[in-house]
Image (cartoon, rainbow, N blue to C red; front, side, top):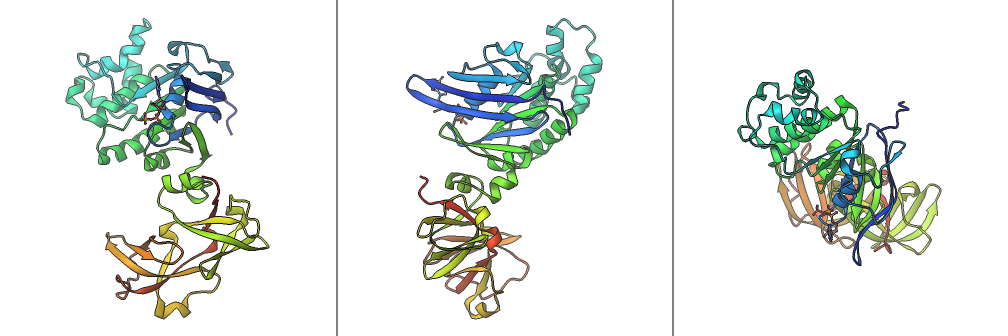
Length: 370
Ligand code: ATP
């Protein structure tokens, strides 16, 4: 375990208002040294404003910003041990790649820059391109130059504001892995802003999901995906089927709910709602956790699984899986992603089916939250 804390980012009660509009509500957030942290949310949720307050590009309306033990709330950007990479790479077009990366060192009056620049270009795997001009590189390569140019200043924290937003999907996926590799190699704190949930989940150790200027949930990608606490998070990270249900009883570690004519079981530990008898809970299940069985074979479904009946409305074969939309009394358009391991030719639109899944994969949300 590391005890190094100089790259911790600590936001305490920071907020930002523009006139009567609150872009970021008072927010407490700690990003541990050496982690890859993502601020994730839809356009306008306040993620860039939060990042800019860490960078010093925006003055908070309240609260403090600490980088390690140092309070930097009122320091200008250039006096903070941070560097920012923006979506627009902002490379100098007339300088070659080597000089673009060397720029920060030269500005500080450092004369012998070769060793450091070569190391940085190797880190981003652009050693061969050193004498090219930015326009001779692909978008992904230019973005790697921007990362090298920021890292050569040895910041304690690298801030990335939608750095992959201008790249096409394939390049973006490559760059996600590349940025993750670079972060692991240099070991400094990365704070990454994105609206792309897949990007955040691929790269980050911890993700803060923002909505309306607030952090709605904070956790590891797996935790957010498997245990969303709000409908916003459940729907923003992947697809969720949500069933409105009523709490019937509590039984040991489980909550038993009534939905339509049947019962569903939900582990209490996976329920973020109060779960009082008679209370409403939204029961959630991810499409890939569901099995689909033709109604004629319902007797073969193991006991102990949650189940609902329905009728296939649509199906589409997409190679590794088939996606079904099933109409049922408790959820009008239930989505199911079934792996094509054992395809059943009877599972076609119009077929009566039973959807079933393990209670362990079920999560519960407060139906009254929104
Ligand atoms: P995007 O992905 O579109 O950049 P975001 O989540 O990063 O969105 P912010 O840029 O942080 O959102 O903006 C949050 C809110 O604050 C938005 O509604 C935006 O219009 C507003 N806002 C940002 N900067 C200003 C400003 N200088 N003056 C007034 N309102 C602003």
